[in-house]
Length: 422
Image (tube, rainbow, N blue to C red; front, side, top):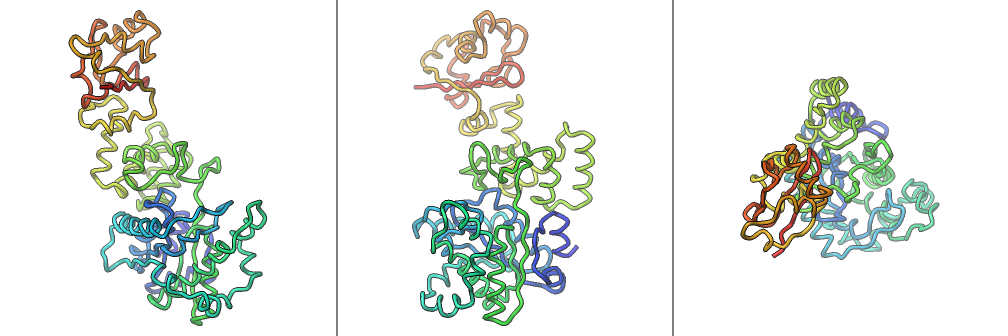
């Protein structure tokens, strides 16, 4: 399939300007995707534009990744109910560098198959008079107010500042510069960017007397309407320092059953035949979670590499009873970060150690020593995922993983983490 057909089959076409399908289906085009440096890492909500770069290259076009080092200092009002807090120049510059490195790593395209640009290279050199005379005169206030991103803010309580109001002008100027510098004729982005994209198309037509085109994909939400990538713990980041490979893997394993096939299309490069087979298997036996596993493995490998995927899988096995010696303390605490925990003085575990019965009661995994004894004798108690054989067992300091942590388990899923203090 050509690029447009591929995007359409995957559910990645929400809007397309007139002639866009024909344009990208005939000849090799330079197509740009923008990234907003609001943080030093992208999150899973940014995977669609990031993966779009590789889809563009795989279809024989030239992808152009633009980091908004200048527009990031203003803030895009699209999809926002209130104005963003402005970041310092230094923070935006750092974010832009980090994003370029992250995009290059995850896309894994040869240097000659992708172009990187930072709009600070031209916008920071543009004088106010040049902006007003050469760019601003091509925008009518009526058309700017009619853009959905502006209209919603004007209708809301917070309104919109002149700073954010001009954002579409600056992004439109990006398209013009990229057209003049690289022959770029297409911009792709989320549906909330449609107004900014069409503003750029109009400016390219007015200033360069050339045609330009735009394609947007739908904003991804859960079945309940929650924005994709948002969890109770916050955003799911692509940087392992912000979201560990284990938690990243688990995010994909826990997507809603009714969304998993859709996400296989959106977030992987798996071919139609394989996705169709996974869809049939999921429909026949959803409990096996084959589609979820394939999704989690594919996306985690792309973002965190083979090593990151292997660590995520080891950590997952630990939570379901696997050996713990393959993980370090930080990984263990990450795996069990959401389970109850308590602290014990390490000195209590010196010498003969502390009775396992008492540890279980202190951890509230048993209501009494008698209850704890009954659980051990029935084979339902584990220390560091090793079955406790005797109700008279003692737990000594040398049982602590990394000298710091003891993981207690009762039954299949009732965990408690004991951290040693001192």
